[in-house]
Image (cartoon, rainbow, N blue to C red; front, top):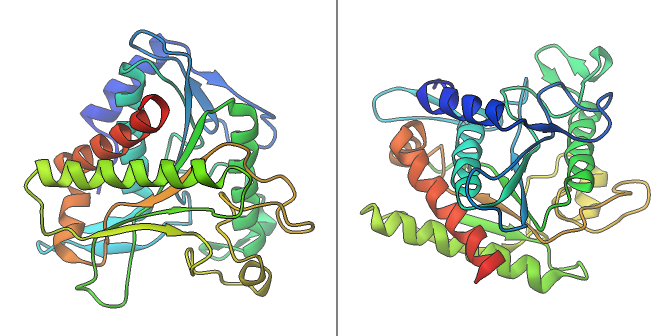
Length: 280
């Protein structure tokens, strides 16, 4: 699936004309990572941080459409985030994006690459860079966009996660609920009533598929979870949610994720949920 194209070119032109801001310690971030974009509509004073999951050698999950097209989570998440950003900016929001191209957020040194994948240290470096971007963003809400997978190709639907163990847990849950409701409503308007609503889920219920003992002991999504000395020293500080709008391993849902129209419907739902959270 090609993420670039007319939509991406139009967004790049629009952001260039409005002077995107490079944020934070540039020695930490790749050149195109952690960028702030001003509103294109009448400013409302709010900032939204959008995080497109994975990047670079970390392609995330993948799926195949009924027609045989391969869909990579890395690319679908980025294009969706771009579309959400365009919608929010036109509605008056400043948007910060952790990554704006197919690469990672952090600068990954060769020592953190093993063959064609990142080491655990490399993945952790990238996650920490996403949190570092959150810290300098000044954001009022943080939404990470991913796509889901399962061993059962019939599993499908939208799920949105939040952390229940933060001091702002109620706001986390409300943001997640608004994003999830926005997705479901957008699917219904598109005529996709068969996509299951899997609901709003605490991030301590097996989300994320932790692959190390330390991550399993932490028991939360790194981007959303609380401080843990020696593991997550500087957690996020604003209401956050992680959404997985579709299962790429379900061929009909992969077809939606592969389609510009499908990603536009997903983006419309996410953007609507964020706006509802911030402005009711």
